Length: 482
Image (tube, rainbow, N blue to C red; front, top):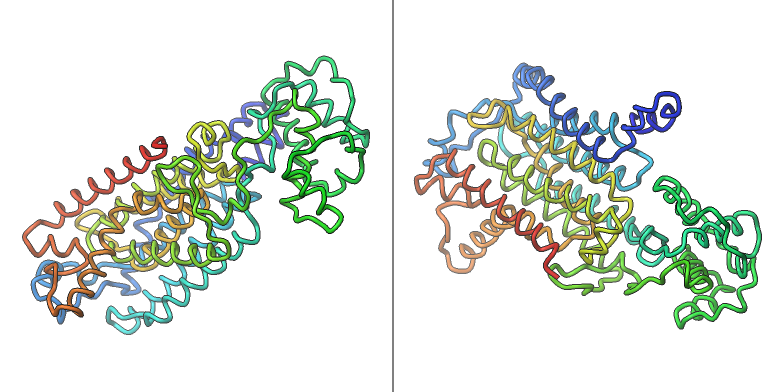
């Protein structure tokens, strides 16, 4: 809301223009979400207590663990609703909901939160720790993952080779002439550069490029003008030959860009290293411009990321402050990555996939960071409230969605290294018991193993946070490792 307020009123009161700055909105979103969490937290906790929505501690599983955790029985759960409410309210104030990536992320975040809420509600009504059946819970996660994967397959978020950026422009006068000619229905080929446009300001350059990129969407650009004298490369000729049959919007944008960059080589650079179908390929961390093509299997890969990340965070949620602290650290890493990949200059310098719409993921991550810190205020040991599946599934889904939408999917293994360890310990424990009849750990997930060997709960949590920080730093360092 404030973003649009700044746009509409900055000519009347120029200081309001500050609300259009990405970094200001991200900072405002973080602080607002934090304040909302801190202010409404006590009321939410009181309401949960009044409704007798308290955690049940199983006595029939591991006696030693029950002895350690029995004091927690009755602590309000479903506190993840506080994280969701604070994040969404903050985004309504600071977010730009014309950005589809923000809408997608919020929908997945709230959708998985709803699955967790239903699970928590059923378990509390039944007065035991069993809520939704595993099949029903997986069905909800799978549905959301399939919807996200299908959308990303049909509506690519990458702009590789189909967009003009500042770094592509050599001569602003010539580019301004091209844009003016195309806008007014005049053939740009052979036009003289417009005088006085060689020193455009940053805002004027952005506006010019915005209009030019809109023109690339024009499916009549090739047929409307005479481009017969323009010698295209092999890719351009192939697209031109298919033009009469009808091109996809992405291919049409690519052909339009090739026409302009070929007709005006001194004005605009050609794209180097263009990668077709980039939206269905996985970037290999640590390698420069090396991709793993998946095609339609990318839909199933997105499904795996969403289901895996949401369940991994859910498994980690077993000690006061552990899951939310580790989630905050991982979300911070992907928030920084979102900012990097949303900038054409930084993404090119680091050889990362450029995702221009990822700007609002930076704001989303900041809002979730603030909400998470506010929740941690009440969830630190001894916890006044637990997040429940409502929070853990939502947080895991948000983390997985940010990984997918920043096109750094495989980096999630490192960013969420702690969650991988926790989930891996469960898989290894179950596999070992079924195959050998023996357990590897005293108990899984891994944090309970360290509790049972004598570590205090606080020591386990802080040491696991340290590991999460190390994983996050390693992931950010890997961005430069090419």
